[in-house]
Image (spheres, rainbow, N blue to C red):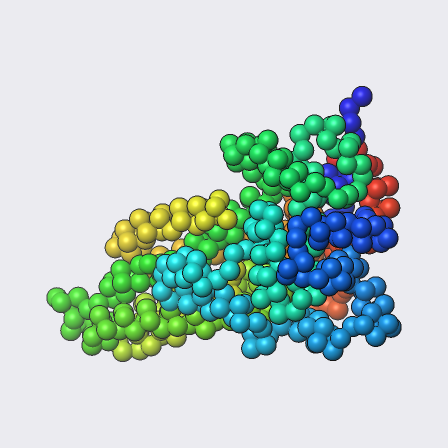
Length: 472
């Protein structure tokens, strides 16, 4: 008889439930201590974190509300830890750790100096904690998390959460029913080498094919493709790589300079340089907007808001090239800065990077020809304004995300587990009608029930997931 997939496989592969579950909640509270104690001992974590802190971090990761209430009642939650929780709920760049400030600075400065990020991150920033955990370098991962979080308890929480989620992902790599049956229906303490062994069994070529054959991975692949393509459709790389070509077209024609004086201004070369410099500075400063809102509103909200704001400013920049006289350079500069401010909060990886650079190459090849054609700068920028509107529609329909909350990277596994047609149906049938009533008709209507929601009772998922599988 064919083995029925476990609830975890249903939640992570293909489901219409939209449930986001904490894997640690599947472990009875009394067993958590045994798992974490073994994890601490077998990986020699005593040199970087004591067992008590790691156990408290595990309890915090398992049930934050219960942990906070219990520790406050017992008086074991320190003022420093309480302040750390408050800072996490209300982030500010000025109160963050030095490590995180370095990362934000490097990403921001890359807006001005192309190529800076890939080199400076390699030397100034730490390795990814998730990558270190995958390589079983747990001590180093905890040290990095401590520098990022600035608090031992939060670092312990993140270490346990990431480690547990990797065990969940191990289920997806298992290729036989026997492997799946052996781990029962919850997350036990898996042997340390299991994750790497299952990765090795799949092979590099097979993992590439899984980007398109596993539904959960295919949805993530589509989302990354759309986000990276949207970056090119906004026209940002026209200014990042082809600013000289664009502004060159605004130079006065030697034969007709008297008929059309001051096309950009009396020194068009210098004007082009100043416009390009202003573009870079605006991009740098406005990147801070992303930091302020990404944890409050979410990545999807930030991306869609950016795409909405880009359209009018890019169109206005395009029309500014039709102006004559000295006001032309002023109009172009003003709307270019506003356009850049609108773009900069957009936060969007070998696959994604490949798509991004392929798109940049297409832009670099086509735009100079289009600028010199009958389209001229105005027509080219209007074209990209239209592409930006299309990108907004594609992101709205096909890039999943929570509307009012920001999920962690681990929780995105469950979001990508929801069938794409369910997400599209939710956007068209529920979000779109609400948006029309709320924003256009100005009615005070309640927001639709969220598609993605957290669940705390694992018994519900065990009982319902099998039924959900048959319904698909």
